[in-house]
Image (cartoon, rainbow, N blue to C red):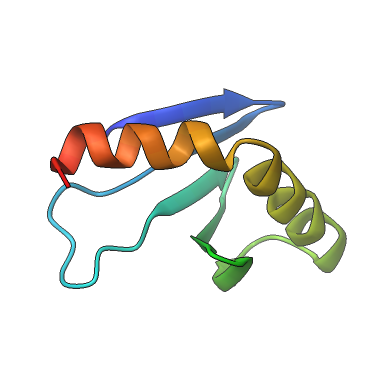
Length: 78
């Protein structure tokens, strides 16, 4: 599970073995985890993050979307 970004205690990563379509990014911090889609940036699923933190995760995802996309394409080759 390649880590794409570490920011303010959050780790942005993706699983190499996910199905089709592959979810672009997961975010973890402490005991919380969220699955985030990029286009548009939105949380698909979250456990352990309150609404304020979810909004912060969406903003961080938007701010780093190009970096996340680039890393995803480099890893999966498409």
